[in-house]
Image (tube, rainbow, N blue to C red; front, top):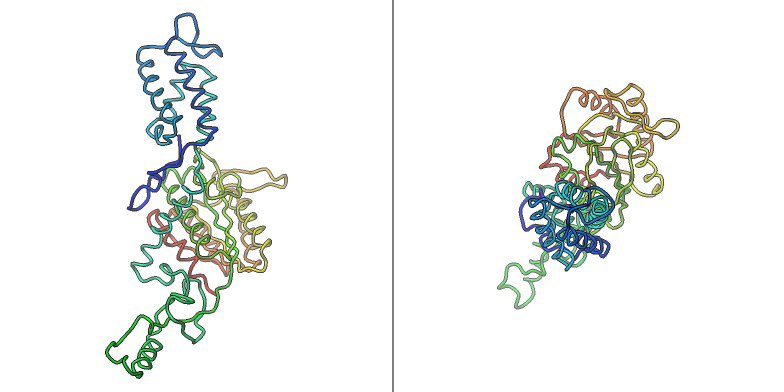
Length: 396
């Protein structure tokens, strides 16, 4: 039914305290309740699957409908988690044979209205995902992961220092701190304390260069088959949270690509149902990324690509998608040409490859020859840390 953030690393479930269900979903739940109540009083003479009702139901189905009625009642009263344990596919079959198409339409409306995340839930998910992504960076002493300013923003040292906590919380300036402590201790009444909090100085850095960033996420079914889709979703949520809280001057652009590519909000990606989508249309995704970079020509361009396969689709002259497996030379040609166009915009492009097979290695060899392209091999567990790290550590 509803998106649930199942695979995160440690800590409490960020959706354990969900927001109340949306009004549209409550209305659909009440409609289903009425149909279930009618079915519980059904007599003979109605064929299952017709538009009319009530329907005669088996004893087994009657018991399942009674359980569903209780869950729907709690949901309609505001308990959004009441339906979390319901198998949507099994429920659809039950309603189809017991209540008919009208119930199926009500269930579809409920599912559509309830599938998404509220802004508060989305923010909570982003915070958890970002914390998970930054933990490996902090553990290995990676630059910038745990800071709000200083080198976390990518700035270069100016040679000056600042009091800690006033204008920055960057790297410690040990020399300036020792000098400040010595000056303080030279004053009467200050010699008994070697170091005070007010003595601490940090390195001053120049403001970082704002960036236009496109994150391109592969939505093809192979991502699900390889259990990579949740890692990709977590990564996008983490990057969105990072930009929103620490790099508001940056412009983040999220694109999902399967047979075609489309711009997505973080909430839309989180609610994506990951159906069996043929094709990996990186050609279209890069085209959308280039449009984003051109809308923000005054910002530093950066493109991050998360994929587990080589391109297998491209846009034709009529803007229709052309899919082929194995990929045609034309698909590869157009994709690389679009990559070259992105690079001509001055962009730094990083591919995060989540698989290792001969065809993908051949594509890697092709793109690595381009100046401005970097390829990083990643697994599901480290993807978030690698993407966040590349974003934070982009060269000036």
